[in-house]
Image (cartoon, rainbow, N blue to C red; front, side, top):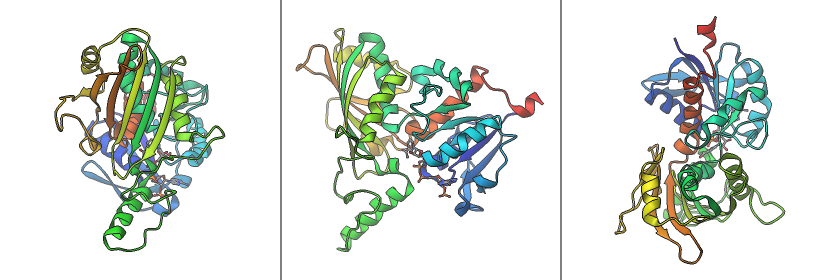
Amino acid sequence: MGYSVAVVGATGNVGREMLGILAERAFPAADVTALASRRSQGVEVSYGERTLKVKALEHFDFAGVDICLMSAGSAVSREWSPKIAAAGAVVIDNSSCWRYDSDVPLVVPEVNADAAAGFRKRGIIANPNCSTMQLVVALKPLHDRARIKRVVVATYQSVSGAGKDAMDELFSQTKAVFQIDEVAPKKFPKRIAFNVIPQIDVFMEDGYTREEWKMVVETKKILDPKIKLVATCVRVPVFIGHSEAVNIEFERPITAEEAREVLRGAPGCIVIDKREPGGYVTPYESAGEDATYISRIREDATVENGLAMWIVSDNLRKGAALNAIQIAECLIKRKLITAKRKAA
Ligand SMILES: NC(=O)c1ccc[n+]([C@@H]2O[C@H](COP(=O)([O-])OP(=O)(O)OC[C@H]3O[C@@H](n4cnc5c(N)ncnc54)[C@H](OP(=O)(O)O)[C@@H]3O)[C@@H](O)[C@H]2O)c1
């Protein structure tokens, strides 16, 4: 006996990772259905050792589904999540569509697992943005120890955060550079190969981008509305793994050594901080891993009670797919959902 699980967006970067993680973690699934757009009907995707044939979302009946892992963008989620929830499944959504709705919990199990219980109002739980996710996993234990007042963060975000077409663009542009061909940006506003782009998502009236705004609003919703945060989000020519250079100001004193100790024992965190060449984690090494890695922890003497650090994680795993599955596991563990088939 287990849960009936549907993965919407199963042909995408995050959806494929979800199927892999469900199998890896031996998620208690009685059945798993892979769904995507009509374009992908019949395409085969891997679920552990098995292969699933993708079905079209628009023709699928959700009546028997317990958990829907949704990863097909905001427009699809806006239309489909309420219908899927009305059919009796809990929707765990990866898009930004529902994150700022006060009736939808925004959950990172290591940080605010208790909030998950609030899903009943709409039947939807939102997954935060990938750059917020790894940040709050590292901030939470430090906040508990010394109360965070203000955070300044610069992100170095991989192209996989913008979907599979964005990965193809980095690959084809890099090839074009070597072949001395023309490099034509399509998905990104400027060339991404051998370059960095200080814009992720659209510009807002105040000059910040929506990605930067998301980090502010989501950190407040998940961790503490009193935390002030300012972000600069940058796309870099890395395939998988987001990095963040972070400066934190605390209410109370905390040394780099204390922070290292706190983070070493914190859920989801691994500290690798050797203060020697290579004694830190880079995004390349984080790819395929579940943890949020913290390196380069040091005191920031330019402010009272300040620390600086480097935070890296796989944006497709903890930044998206893994977190969604951890939320589902949390609902099961806390008995917040029951399998329809079992209940029948
Ligand atoms: N990548 C990340 O690091 C990350 C992190 C956090 C959140 N997210 C969010 O997760 C979502 C998916 O991201 P991704 O990187 O996996 O994108 P992606 O690689 O571009 O994949 C998009 C998926 O959505 C499906 N889809 C598109 N239109 C559809 C429709 N009308 N009906 C059904 N399925 C449809 C696609 O199916 P077809 O192949 O059939 O087109 C594909 O499976 C986005 O909302 C993104 O913002 C991504």
